[in-house]
Image 1 (cartoon, rainbow, N blue to C red):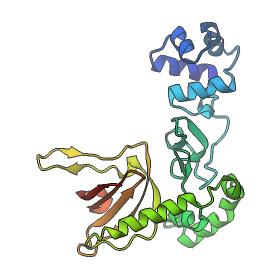
Image 2 (image 1 turned 90 degrees about the vertical axis):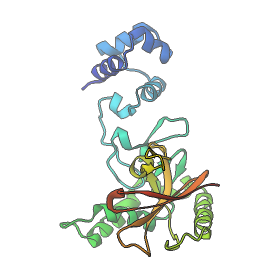
Image 3 (image 1 turned 135 degrees about the vertical axis):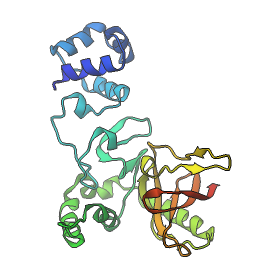
Image 4 (image 1 turned 90 degrees about the horizontal axis):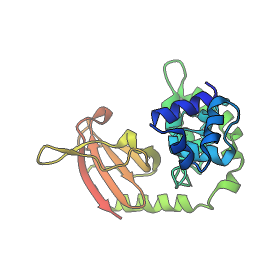
Length: 254
């Protein structure tokens, strides 16, 4: 679709009149009308406002003229997995596993490759083939080309090491030592924990990216430990395959 059709459909979907939309993005009703007839298109700053208002990327507003690709891991980007800035606006350069709330999640290419290989390898594409492909292609992406410029001088790595130390110091029975923490999006790990009264509760925000890992359980091979943390808390749980029958072991404020 063209921009004029996309804007019209989004306005209708959100139940906004042309006047109401104009007020929200600080333009006149006539400007909105010209967008929807195709006479003009919004300028860059207005596109940013429309993107945030309608929760779609600027690329989508413009009719998706480009195939967006995460400039850290190479994943094709759809609006649902595009990263966010601290103010909630979309950063169309990265997926939400590689960049979240103004923070880059990976500073070590080998760590990223280890994570990606697990999701790419299959019966027709071996782990060795996936690893070789990633080693060849990822260094060509903008983030890794500009890592020295974009990096934070090791501050985030130091934070992760501190978190790992705090988690291991808890001494959870049957849980191996945590060695790495990976970026995990809330919607994939927000498990429902059953309360004594039979109700269930979730502790995470589906749209937030956390640090975590999955570890084997020493006393029950049918269950795994799940570790999740951020600047505010540490959560330890166990669960069966595919997140079934989750049990909360610890939720600790930092």
